[in-house]
Image (tube, rainbow, N blue to C red; front, top):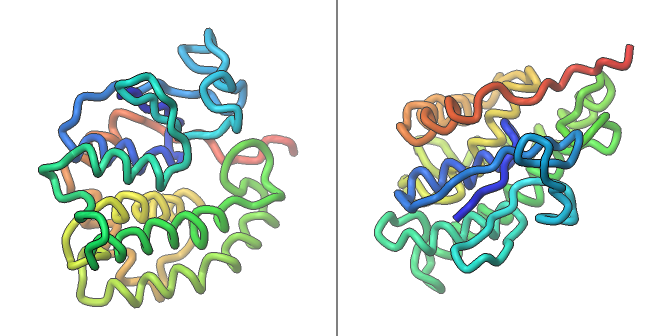
Length: 214
């Protein structure tokens, strides 16, 4: 499998999951400013016409897009790792609920229409707007993590890798973890996982969010 990613973007979640899965994979870094990969030699729109990451090229050569879908695909392939439960089990539906909630209520609300470029909010106004939109949703998740390390059955699974992207974005946007103590603890615990540490080092510094227009 080949994962197309950009450092610090939502593609971090399937990247972590691939590392947790022990499946064989390679990664290709995408430049979202120029919409290219392979150090500018290839047009990323030929991989994903929507021009964002992640995208996954399967072993059969098919392209899969959308973060939550890619994560379920990886988790299903890693049959011995318990990254997602058996289809139609109660645990499976809980995990799907969280994947969908993170995708629609957190991920998309972190993306401001007033940002500059294909990135997180990077102006003062857009950062404030996003904070107002995501705070109540983050508090909801924080409550669900009370006395728990992970979202479902207190065991690491696919949704936790996705949630870590959200807590990582809290750091990147310099938002406060005040009143989000459980999410702060979750973030700290996730950073102790070997797969997370390896992927963060492999991806390196995330794209700058600084507004350079002024």
